[in-house]
Length: 217
Image (tube, rainbow, N blue to C red; front, side):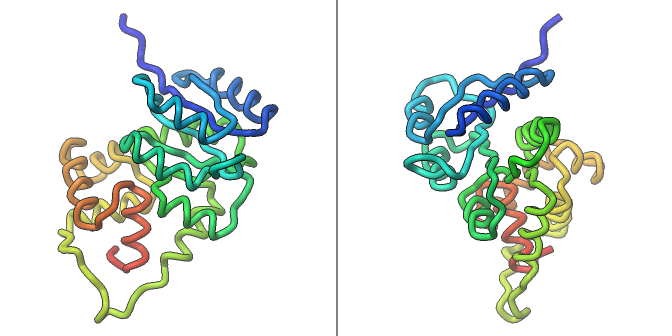
């Protein structure tokens, strides 16, 4: 019987003790493997030039040299489809919104337990946008402010696309959206690609953030 494929995570964290502890914790979770570890964004960039890439990068914000949020742009430039999940001690608004706008797949606090971090890795790889609840509340509160109706752009979103955006905003991943709407996962993927194109974004978090900010859903 063929073994199920493992989700490979690379960890970028300059605190040696935390990095080693989290690596051990991730390796103990069924279905996950912490393939490589780095203490700086610069060393990660070098590794990204190699042929083998992970499924997701867990990225600290406060790093020596290039910070984690600034690093997301370079990661996306080298590997556009690679998921990045911010894992940090900082929950201030500026860092959260910079990360979301840069294209992070999610934003977790280091106070999260290991099981929560492992679940978030799986969710992000599946296309979700995991966030620590307090962070998610900040994002929703920020983007709840809307433009006057006369200034709003509709982006020609269909009712089905808006319905999918609403489910994305509620935290549903692609498979769950397909079940909710009784359509195939392939059809959901097609709708999401169309949403990205119409909204001029590249990630779930970017699409949801823009939809909330501009009162599209």
